[in-house]
Image (tube, rainbow, N blue to C red; front, side):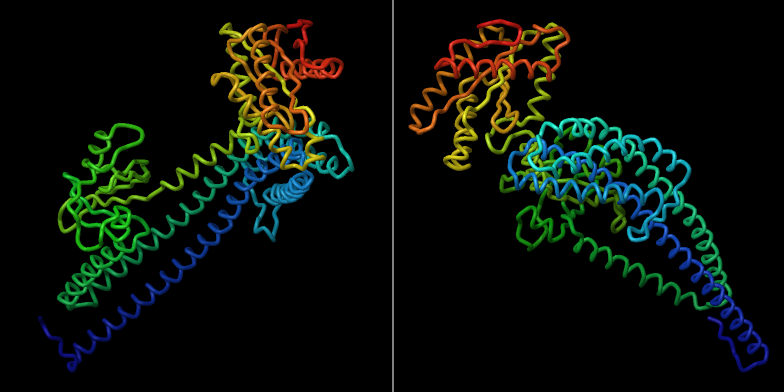
Amino acid sequence: METVNFTKPKSREMGRMLRKRYVLALSLIGCLVLFSQGMIQLAIFFQQDDSRIVNIAGRQRMLSQRINKAVFGLYVSLDTEMRKRYSTELGASLALWERSHRGLQHGDKELGLPGSNSPKVVEMFAGIEAQYQDMLAAGKQVLQTVAEEGYAQERLIVPLRVIQAQEQSFLKGMDAIVFQYDSESKLKVEAIKIVEIVILILTILTLTLEVLFIFRPAQKQIEVAMEEIENSHKNMERLFETAPAAMFLLDGSTFQVLKLNHLAHEVLKLPRLETPVLNLSAMLSVRQGNMQVLMDQLKAGVTVENVEMVLTLPVGVSLVVLMSSHLIQYNGEDMLLMGLADITKMKEAEEILKRFATIDEMTGLMNKRSGLQLLTNAMQRVQGGQGTLSLCFMDVDGLKAVNDTYGHEEGDFYIQTIAQVVRTTVSAQDTVFRYGGDEIVLVLGDCDRQAAAAVLLRLEQSIAQKASESGKSYRMHVSMGLAVCGDVPGETPESLLIRADQAMYQNKRADKAKAGLSRFIDQVGHRV
């Protein structure tokens, strides 16, 4: 390497020139860094504002669903404490919903909402304003109603239907608004990225000139580069080991496990001694799709993210996992970097939530919402010419008196006993769901009037036998009303339920006039 003697005038001039270039290069780099930091801070500022807007806009969806749930709870709940809880939840949700809706459009400093919407967003808000106003007015009407002493729950059905009718349109509109907010945010970030790329190019150019005309010792540069490579390798090892998921380094062609981190040892329930001889392709299976196609994609280097799979452990236990895989270069060879996230408990929780969404917790019967959906589907099939359908509306007699006299625990036992008898007496293909506090609905598929009456008589006998066996001091009995789909043209689930309910009240009056249920009367004048 040539040595420069700075004691000579020419060398001193060269040194001064290099120092000037060095200072100029550092100054330019400093300016670029400051400008870049300013752009980054601007991007963070935009991102924070946009994140708050997107989060609050997304929260509107959750609040509208909570409002619907609270109103529905007020309508169906018979418990005073539950009504108070639903009323409080409705009031809080409506207030936050209204404030957020106003803030998203006109700004709210406390919520961090600037209110500076694009014309497109303004237009989209205008598109859902009618649904919003209807739902808001209905919600406030419910609050006014429940504030009255001794209000009738039937007064809540109209605002409840308004909310339910407008909710889907409102949710769809809010989804579009959230998407629009997100799109506009991305456009802002992309614009800043372009500026940052320009800054990056200028920075690289400045560094290149600095390397070419200032830093002479190339050997030093090579040493620094080699050190950086070594550090990158070490960082990759640290990242692999400390990743918050089970990580595997696999042979790209055989899927043989070459390396795994400590979480992978825990998932596979293996001791952390050394890398076991394992082949993940034999342990994994897809829940949906073709396993061989997935394996071919992985071998071809296709990046795969969050594929739901089943991992069968060497001990015979199966886990549900999310698999992500990327093809990387490691030590000069093609390797698969695969991550597995155990979601078994989450899937189990989902199944529990699905059950709670369809089952009435008190009786174990299907809840009203799910039962009405099945009734609607069954009626559509019958009205399309497929089979017959009869509906029985049942009222558990004396439930309130049992609650008042013997306590709610005994009342719970009473309705649970009736529900169990109904469920075990009718066919497994029939639908039984709890309609209200003491009301149970039985949907008898492929069952005409005479056959349905026979089922109800058998059901009455089963209840009487159960009452005799239980030895209770109160009378265990249900009033039943029968309606057959097709007797009235253009029948709807609501009108069919009303007919069966009216028939039930006729039978209840007949039961009071004459001991025992001699016949069932439906609402088209038939006596069966």
